[in-house]
Image (spheres, rainbow, N blue to C red):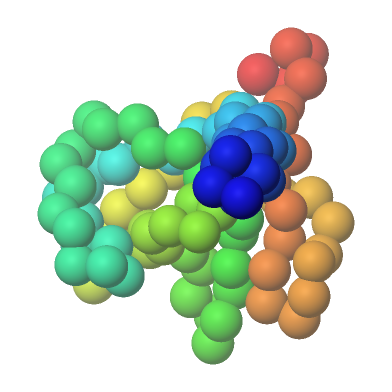
Length: 106
């Protein structure tokens, strides 16, 4: 029974990490010190994987799948920039999937 439970867990985990790894093709660069929604502090120059752009009440944030969200601006100053993606199709009212740029667009 334990072996079966382990195998179910392992293959579920492996499937989830494969999907998560595919989503890390998009990144932002932190351009000013910023605190994410989980209260982690990020320094200028750090590069962070993201996969969703969220627009809520005219504020844009970039979010990692199942992780932190980073503001595009703080105190009317740029806080983060998309560096290798663009907003794609809408997922719901607030979220758009981020799509990697083709080499011609970079």
